[in-house]
Image 1 (cartoon, rainbow, N blue to C red):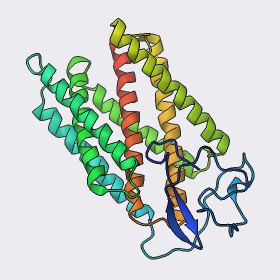
Image 2 (image 1 turned 135 degrees about the horizontal axis):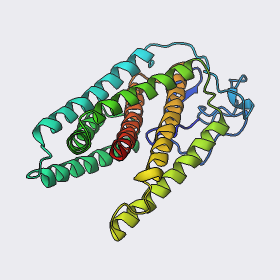
Image 3 (image 1 turned 90 degrees about the vertical axis):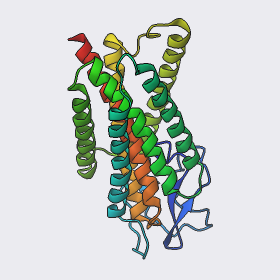
Image 4 (image 1 turned 90 degrees about the horizontal axis):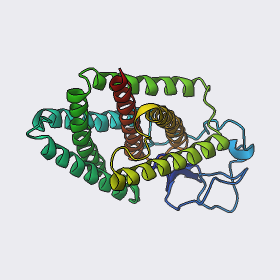
Length: 295
């Protein structure tokens, strides 16, 4: 199963001859029914029992013998805490050092946009790397934090001081809710679920790009997808898509642990989860800002 998260889109954890490997070969689509999506092209599939054998069956976690140096849930939690902590520290530093008053607003916005571009480039570089590079991932988190700090400070100053905390709490609630639902198997990560999320995400991103182009060349809010009633609707859709991405990422992490992926891959898992949480936070911040503005 390929996660919708861009970090996981080109790669997946794999198992060959009883131990974990890392498959960097891109796949054009979902694996065929009955095929092991993590196999590395062996002639005979030693894993007869395969959750993909039924296209709409729930994708349960495969079992693999533990080995020394394999990724564990503690590794993922620790690396995710490091990356998210770096985001928070970067945001706090930007909040205090880059004021958004009338005299410094343009300068602070310029630095924030530059930081966002650097974070985007770093994420692309990491996505095309064969192995996770902790320095790249932590640097991405730091620059992303600078961007979030300036944006959050501006929202707090011009919309309302409580909006940022509400967005943070909302993001935490979404994460906790999806995690509980996933662990209780209320969310069934099937190939149909994966295809639906990918199609919805592509449509959502295309609409946002069209809206941005109209805003840049036509002025105002473009087609109005980010304000008023449509803004609220698309904000809710964005958060729901983020929640679906979390479920896919949880499945990717679960399978990586079950297949005995190398411990260093926990950095990749942390990277992907951080990107998804940043997305949910931004959508939550935008939605609450619209609702606060309507009040």
